Image 1 (cartoon, one colour):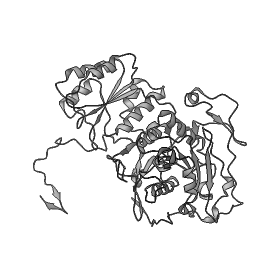
Image 2 (cartoon, helix red, strand yellow):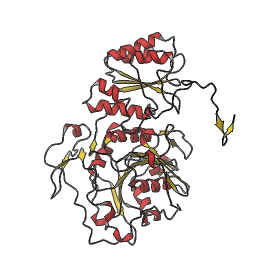
Image 3 (cartoon, rainbow, N blue to C red):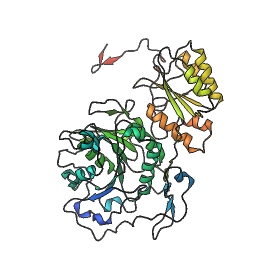
Image 4 (cartoon, rainbow, N blue to C red):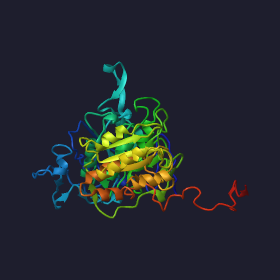
Length: 477
């Protein structure tokens, strides 16, 4: 664990290896972000004493849309998407296969972070047209951030803010919105050192998990955050969440999609919302946080994903033809049978939230027959657990053996959010066979699951007679 000697206060945040103020670029050298939609509010600010450095060359200007038509992959996401672009002095490159390095060395300039705001509680303010109820307000985030003195500190990065229009409630976010964010990140990948995505908390775990799979070979931080209390309130959690997300988005140690909330940085595809009325709203039940903050910032270096060996690739297609069923005692399997056997559903996967380590009623032979019918129709059935922590172990009980024989695949210790998003990503690839999708569900692609070699053995698999257990500093019990 790396312990950064960083004392946090409302006015200053100091990190190790801070960039001297003499290396700050002029804001005019920071190009406007290339985005998929019309920009309602774009705003750039820098520390008050920032001065341009003549020895540092500016970034190339943002590219303009090419004359060639977009690829079919982009057309399915939104009209007018740019699939290829180029700048003067460089050959054309594929926006879905981008280099992972910035145009300028990071040590020669101040870090740059692009903030993409989709909406959520953080951006809300009282709306007079709705009897004073809270609603997202376009432009409010930009105005508030421009008045935040913390962002003027020398240790903070240059920041570019883009607010999507209209701002959305997180319940309205879906695969098309995920793809828009992923493509906007890829098109600005060479211009910024990190990205912060502001969204609502209700589906943040789904959006962040989806982005972790859509951005293959990600070599820069993409940090999701939001708040339980709007930024406009005198007492809120939005201010700290936003500032810490900007700090982590400018860190060189983070090469993945993360969620920062309250006092911890979580791996995106390990996170889940656990509380609706507490500031500690997110947690990763089966994995330690990537970092914790207090008086200092404690990073668990051994948990960070390594730098990718390939170039960034964006997979914008997500096939969400799947269904999630949470079993309850006495459930009627006829509804599931109809969904499996009805050809109109065209279902690709069925996610079952089973009891405990992957159990279901042993007297439900008809349900096993439904699962066998799903296998014949090439519908992948994945078993997750209803427990917050722990893993599915299908081979541990007799019922689990029956499920395995029926073709059910274990999700191990993946969250339901990560399981569904991983399935949507794999089926959206279209270059994978059903057998390959089934096999990859048991492979950790983005650190979303604990492999068998890393997990503990099931209980009672070893002989424990005669063993001596110690606790409380070695006192025998």
